[in-house]
Image (cartoon, rainbow, N blue to C red; front, side, top):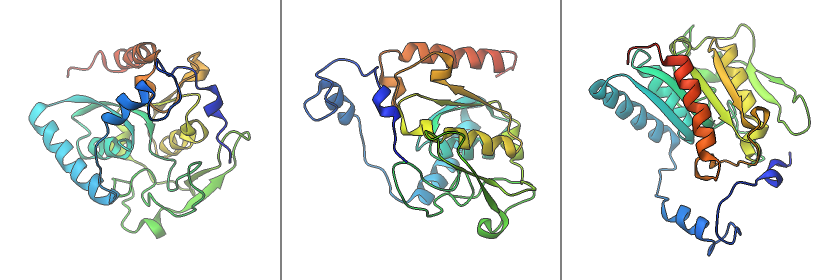
Length: 236
């Protein structure tokens, strides 16, 4: 499908706004980038173990992830559900099972639905290709993608279900077409996740790197309000 939301991007700040080399905003962003491993299984495995070890040292925490970090947040929360007091996923890598919009491949890239490596399901999943049976749900309108959900009866995600979850999606990102699939997948698996669809909340013009854009403090305030509402009474 076409990614039409990019036409709505209006919050990139400063510079000549070309989005290319020579644009001061682009150059500053590009200078912040570092290498990463292409082996997603290795990345998720070491990130889950190191994240869990960090929580064992520092104690309870609220985790905020973005994009490729989304599955890592799910995995750390799965490993330490008592220590993760809330999980905020800013446009987490998705949708379940497959990549969409930026690729035409139909390969199953996240065999455990929201992750590449094992995450706790009930009943347990040992062979996801067989035990996580999928069904396709159609898109509600042309700007959305179809979704993979579990075929009934859906296995549950008991550790994630213990944790307040929030997914945030912008107007002009490629995630706008499919983040709702991740929300529906989690809800089907027993996770009471809240969905902050920014344009529906009156925050328009943002793209995937929302925290770098001119109205980032407005978005941060909405996330902070959710945190206060959900976990202010918890003893961290």
